[in-house]
Each structure stands twice: as C-alpha cells, then as structure tokens.
Image 1 (cartoon, rainbow, N blue to C red):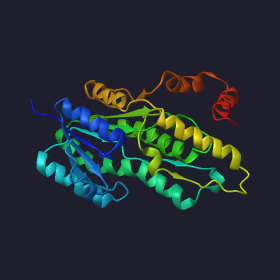
Image 2: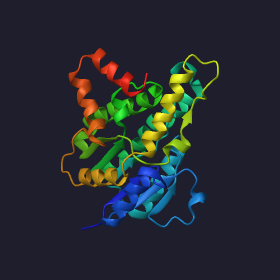
Image 3: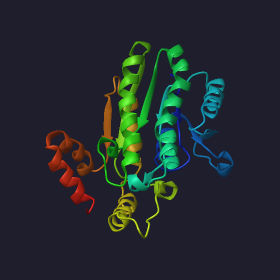
Image 4: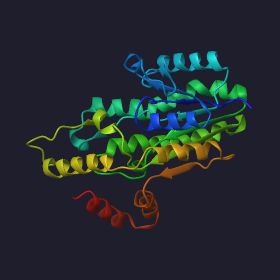
Length: 269
C-alpha cells in the first residue's frame, strides 16, 4: 500500500510542525509549508514548500509542485493561522482584513487549489484547524473568534458540496496549546487614554499566560491521526482541556446571559 501524501500549511513551527513530525514518524509522506523557505534551510523533519496562504498564486504553485512530485494528495491540514487581539473599537481595519486573509481566505483558497486533484482521485480528506474560541465571542479576541467561526461554517458547506466526489471535510478545534503563536500575533497597543486600558491589559496578560501554560501540541497531532484513520469523519472535533471542551457544551445548554456572565468572570471583567 502506498504511503499517504499529506500537506500541512504553516508546517514549519508550532502545532503544524508537531503534526508533521508525528505523522512522519507514523510512516506518512509529509509536506509542510512556510512563507519564508530561506529561514529553514536546515529543516530536516519533513519536506517544506514555499507558500503564502494569502496569495492564491503562491498556493497553486506549491500544490502543483507537490502533485508533480507525488502524483496525488491524500490529506490536507489547513493549519496556517495568525492571532489577533484588541478592543474591536480600536483594532485597525487593515489588521482585521489581514486576519481574515490568513485565517479564512487562506484555507478557502487552499481548498480550491487541491479539490481538482482530489476529485480526480475520487478521494481526499481536508482537515481545517479552527479553534474552541471560534464557538464564542470572547472579549478582546472577537476578530480571531470570527475568523475561526467562519471557517467552521464554510467547512460544513464544503462537506455537502463535495460529498459526491469521495472527499471528506472536517474541523478540528484546539484549545490552548503551548506554541509560538503569541510572538506572531497582532495585538492592538494598550493606549494610555483608552476606556478599555485596564481590563484589556489584564486580559492580554491572561491570554499570554494561557498559551504559555497550554497543553502539548502532540495531543493535536494524535487527534489528527485519529481523524485520518476514521472512515467517515464527523463534522467537528475538539481537542484541549476538559474545561475548554466543556465550555462549548455549556454554551448550548445555558441561557445566553448566564453564559455571558461566565465568560466575563473567566476574562476577569
């Protein structure tokens, strides 16, 4: 049996790298992507391709290279993403558009680029990495929540539209995991005269602490392997601490205002 070919966007660091290393150890042929290939000339964990998910031409070029080398593509993990925090009122529109370009338009354009090959094969699996934060509107993380929530919804639509082609779509929503996402995250500066100054400052520190104390990204990689081995994957999967996963259940069963109070308390507001 041929080794399955896997493409992971944003595979040079963080969760993407952890997934790639783990799947390589399990015998898969893994390709990761990075915006700056020159930075990773010593990268030897698996093969890296140059790709900027904000650029459809860059996406198509990377997919074409992979198909030319391997002749097929079995699994895509849409992992590339960026963080963004700040009061909605004070977040620059340019940064909002950048976040949607990477976290929503990026995965959407990757899917468009790989669907013709998967349709030709009559099989394929696309796993969109979303976030538990995408199930709720968190204070000072509204844009990030919106990008990931939108990706959850579009995945549901893709599932229905491509079902006849033997292609499976699913979402995996992680909670907090220890990665370098904070270093690349855009955050609106804490302005001295801002009406949100004190509470935003506290929330920003709490967000960074949650990431620093987050789980091992290997948990995400193991969940990915489980999904790959599942004949008919579910629409949505979650991975994270019990409380993070249970927060989604609480939103379904609690009255809106009660749930809102829980979020305010958790956020220290």
